[in-house]
Length: 138
Ligand SMILES: [Zn+2]
Ligand SMILES: [Zn+2]
Ligand SMILES: [Zn+2]
Image (cartoon, rainbow, N blue to C red):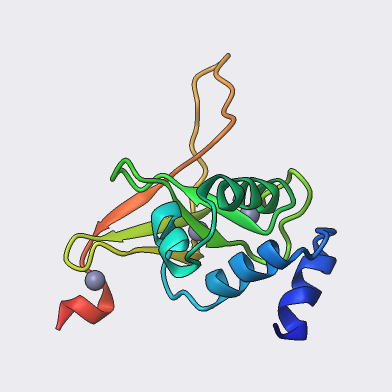
């Protein structure tokens, strides 16, 4: 296991257990967001519940975020460096490609400010753009 993966966990104050290193290593290799089932397949024979708990810890510590891309299957992706303990600062747009069925983080496309009526308090924001990704477009 490489030192960079371990360093990333320590930086987010996560104890680098073998399982956490494996999950993070797999996430680092992805170019798009990945589902729990895909992670499970990539780490066979690992226990689904343990993987799920690992992802929960990552989310709480600001290492990964969950994406609801409208497919009904939550996807997981790594956060930007500035996310921290129970604080996610990377409110970016996600893109779902209807051709390859992959979900991508678009960290440079921030979710625009949404004006809410008086008395409405937002706790979460999710913006998914659907279409065709650059690889499928040609
Ligand atoms: Zn985040
Ligand atoms: Zn595509
Ligand atoms: Zn994302």
